[in-house]
Amino acid sequence: MRAVVVALGKIGLPLAARIAQAGHEVVGCDVDQRVVDAVNAGRVPYPGESSLEGVLAEIVAAGRLCARRDTTAAVAQGAELVVAVPPLVIDGEAQPDWRILDAVIDDIGRGLRPGTTVSVETTLPVGAIRGRIAPALERASGLRSGVDFHVVHSPERVFSGRVLRDLDAYPKLVGGLDRVGEARAAELYRAFLGAEVWELGSAEAAELTKLAETTYRDVNIAFANELARYADRLGLDVERVIAAANSQPFSHIHRPGVAVGGHCIPVYPRLLLSGDPSATLPRAARAVNEAMPAYAVERLGDLLDGGLRGARVLILGVAYRGAVKETAFSGAFALRDAIDAAGGLALATDPLYEDGELAALGFEPWDGEPIDAAILQADHPEYRGLTAADLPGARAVLDGRAVLDLAGLRAAGLEAAGIGR
Image (cartoon, rainbow, N blue to C red; front, side, top):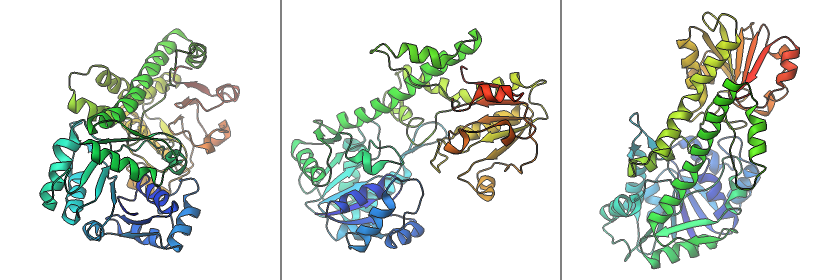
C-alpha cells in the first residue's frame, strides 16, 4: 500500500519507518525543513529512539520512505492510508488548543481522494472525530465521510525511546464512525503491525480508552505523591510502604516524584475534563501533581539551615524524564520558579543540553562553581552514581526521583532526603 504520515516527530517518524519496514511506500510530511532534510538523508533528526537510525537509513536507501513539507500534495497523489499524529496541546486555561491539528486536517482534506482512510492517532477529547475531524475533512475535500473516504481514531500507545518495539507489543486500537470504515482501517494496520488490532466499535470508544489509560496513571501517581507527603510527616520511607502494599496482587501503586512531565500525562486528563468537566478525580490528581515541585523546594529548604534565601540551588536535569531530550511540562520550570520565589538562585545542568540550549529554555547554566544545595529532577543514567564530590559546596540534596544513594551522601556530610524518603 501507499501511506502518508503527517508530523514526523518522536511518534510519527518511527511509525512511518515501521510502515516502510513492512515493505510499503511511505511519504512522511513535516513543516520543519530541517526534519525533512534529515529524513531524506537517512538521519534521525532527534536523539534517543532505540534502533531507529539503522532502520531509517535502510528504508530511505531502498526508496520506501521519503519526506516532504507539502502535506496536501502528498495526500493528493493518492494513498490507501493517511495517518495524522500532530500534537493537540492545551492552552493557558487548560483547554484544548486546536490550531495545529486543525491546520493539519485542513491540509489533508484539501488533498484527499476517494478511497482513502484517514487515521488520527493524536489523543483527542471524546467526540472529536465525529464532531470536528470528519466534518472538517468533508469541508476541505468536498467528499463524503463514510461514502468517499473513511476516518477513524487509532490512538498512539507507545513510549518515546522505544516506539518501534512498542508498536508490535501493545494491541492497536481502532474506532471508526461506521463498521465498514473501522474494518478497513483495521485491515490496513494489520498490513504492517505485528500486534493485535482491536476494533472498538466506535471512534468515541477509542477516544475514551486512550484518555482512560493515561488519566489512570496521573491519578495513581497523585495517590503515591500524597502517600509520600504523609510519609514525610511520619518519618517513614514510602518506597518500603509502596513495595509492601504492592506485594498484594490487587495493589498497583505507582512511584512518587518531584513532577509529572511529558506530552501525555499532564495533558490528557485535561482533555478528558474538557469533555466531562464534572469528573472530580482527574481534576484533584492534576492539582496534587502540579503542586509537587513547590513541595520539593519547600522540603529542600527544610534540609538547608536557614532556608533557600540567598542560596545557589542546582537543578539536576531539565528534561522531563531520564535519557530523553525533551522538556514538555518538565518539572524543572516549576522548580526554577519556586526556588526564585523562595529567594534562591536557580541554576541548571543536564547532560543532554548545552549551556546555550539551557539559556534558551530560560535557565541559568551552572558554571561549576560551589553551590549550596541541589535537587534531582530528571533520572538521567549519569546521575545514578552521583557523589558529594560532584556537588562542590553543597550542604543539602533532595532526590526527586529515588535514584540517589542517600546514605552515601549523608556519610559525606550532606543533608539528603527524597520525596517520602
